[in-house]
Amino acid sequence: MFDTLTGSLFERITRLARARWGLSLTERKFSLVQNRLTSHLRKSGGTIEEWVQRIEKSPSESDMLLFFDILSTNVTSFFRDSTHFDFLERELWTPLARGQRTAAGRKIRFWSAACSTGAEPYSIAMQALELLPPEQRWDVKVIGSDLSSKALAAARAGVFPESQLAGLSPERRKRWLTPSPKSSEPEWSIRPEVRALVEFRQHNLMDPPHAIGGPFDCIMLRNCMIYFDRETREEVVHRMHSMLKPSAWLIVGSAETLSSLKVPFKTTAASIYTKE
Image (cartoon, rainbow, N blue to C red; front, top):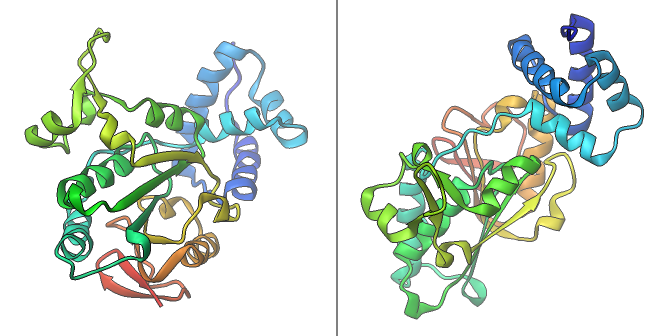
């Protein structure tokens, strides 16, 4: 018989999540945390109280990564929010291909932060391959980062079930994916030429970002800040600012905004901001 998550235990978990990752857990997350903790403890044994005490006093790095996996929700899809990809086609890829825009060393760098299982960085890479003529020899690299070990393992594997391909047209599916024959259910693998443009790294958004690389032409930080309080959002956005080239873009989720934050960005379009 497993114990249940009490209000006081949830508050302790909330404090830990805020201190380590800047996550702002509301009461709406109570049931999700309880269900995931109970599921984990069925396999590992122990009580929620014992588990929280270990996390508070002497957690290993693997304990904390598992803790984050329990709290996080990895939802993603290919070419999610097409208006952002339309913007990139119009303002970046097409001008580069036509010689109307240039870049030092012909290098284009993207950071897909909090990229979950990888659909977003793979989408960026697909679009670059589609719109930049290969004879122009652009050097494109997309860094996908996340804290979740489980999500990153799936991203690096680059194999997606049929249910996660809704954002891909039949033409893109045929061009950039190959069917995975060893699977009992329909699955598709990212082709090598797409994989070659993408690199995945584990990163906590509360840590200094310089190990990620950069500077970047564009950072996508989408559908992530809804988990942060105002103070943490400002901290994270300032970190993103330091990693961008002059006049480069920060793209947030379509339901997110920087308008209430004191950050050095100007609005370019809805949920798209330019570094000042």
